[in-house]
Length: 68
Image (cartoon, rainbow, N blue to C red; front, side):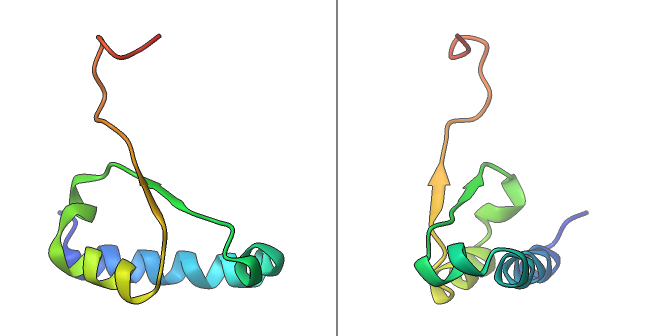
């Protein structure tokens, strides 16, 4: 089971990887997180993302009616 702490740890590691692998995107803050994972809806995760000024691009959950 994925907890809020685990999700925050994964996101923290992801941020460090972006910082190391894509310094130009990091400096320009030109990256965003495309997210619809239910674990990321936890308050602790949203507080982490807000505190780190991480842009999150929401999208609707999968629906056969919405697919092209």
